[in-house]
Image 1 (tube, rainbow, N blue to C red):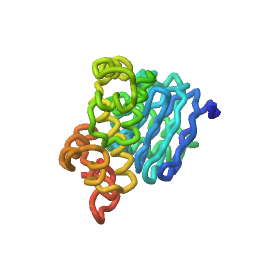
Image 2 (image 1 turned 60 degrees about the vertical axis):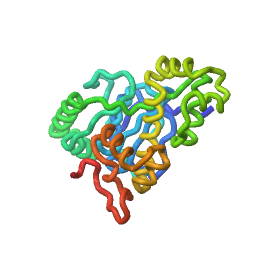
Image 3 (image 1 turned 90 degrees about the vertical axis):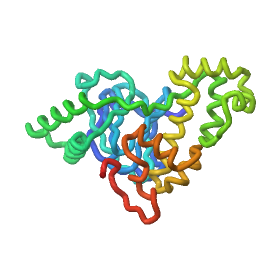
Image 4 (image 1 turned 180 degrees about the vertical axis):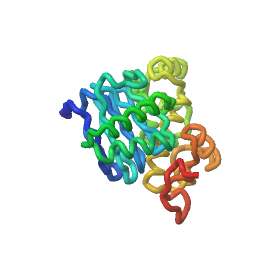
Length: 261
C-alpha cells in the first residue's frame, strides 16, 4: 500500500511539473487552491478525478487525500488557506471558473509567498472575494466502486473512443448485469448517466492530449467524436473556449492562454 504523506501546512508556492509528472498522495490540515498557470492540472482522490485547464482552478478541502498530475509543461500555483477561510463553504473537491482578474490575483499572491505585509493581506482578501463569486464547473469524473461498474468503466478508461453501447460493453466486460441495472447504477453511484460519464471521460482525456500538443483533429478521433467540429462544440460548451487555444492545435501554432481572444 502506498504511504500517504501528511503535510500539515498547505504551502503557498509555485512549482513546475513536466508532462505526466505528479505529486504522490498526501493530505493537508489546510484548504488548498491549485491552479495551472500553464498546462493542465488534475487531482485524483478516492472519489474520482477533477481536471482544470488555465481557465479553471481546483479547490481541495482540508484533510482530503489527493494527488496532483500535470499535462504539458504545468506551472502549479498553490494557495494554502487555514480551515476558517472557506469562501464557498465547500467540503469536497471542486473545479472553479477563473476569469482574468482571479488569474492575476493567484499569480501575484503565489509570486512572493513569504511576504506578510498589509498589502499582501489585502490581496488575499480580494482573492477570496473573487473565489466566492466563482461558479462551480461540472468537471468531475467520479470513480466507480461497484464491481460491475468498475468492469465496464475499465474498458472506457483503456480506450475513451470505444463506440459501443452499455449493453455490449457489459457483455464484453463480463459485468454480470444487464443494461437497465447498469444504467441505474451509473445514476445512483456516479450521479450521472452512462453517456454523461463517458463524455466527461473523453473531455478529461482531450485536455490531457491537447496539453501535450496533439492536434485538434487527432484529439477528436482518439477521444471518440465523429468529427472535429462535433468535438469543438462539446469542448466549447464545457470549457468556454475552443480547443484551438492550446499549443499544437494547428500546425505551427504557438502557445497562448485559453482565455486569450
